[in-house]
Image (cartoon, rainbow, N blue to C red):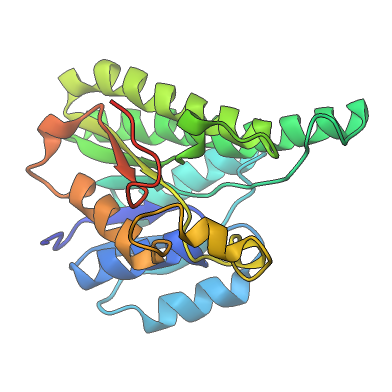
Length: 252
């Protein structure tokens, strides 16, 4: 894949899928803005090891609209223009409805929707308009299999990812006439820090056998799917939701 001289922002890039995506974009010739929330040392270590030049780490609280706006403005100021936005950052908090108080329920919903849905919505608005003004671009959202199959232990997470799917499809229709494509990747289980406690716990084997491959995805595999959707020449895929769950959940 050739993304030479493309400018890319990957949110939540200090670890997991975001880190793998940042590495893959850099290997393809892109300059990468590595967004992080709190993991400054990890982000800076990643930037230092990326091939090529022009990469940098940038902090922002995606749950705060002022911080999101500053992130968008700073990336455009640094790069001049942005070609690809990857909305990867997200949080997952378990809150089974039969086991939490109403106060806990409200707090998790507010945090989850703010980071997982409103943050990407605001970034897509700000940077999607910038792309439209400067000749087009691509937005790739990282959703989840949970948007389709349900998340009984974390309903706010499932709902936020379903909302992200709908956001991507709405923006795909709105921005296509302006040269901006919007696509979504919906992974299943991935071997990330967030998933490690589950994969190493008593339910780990059951999780792995959900896929007929007998394993979960590597972050690199999901990164390759992100790159595919972000590559110039694949604009007719706009609006798509690409399942990347190892046939663990099939829909038609």
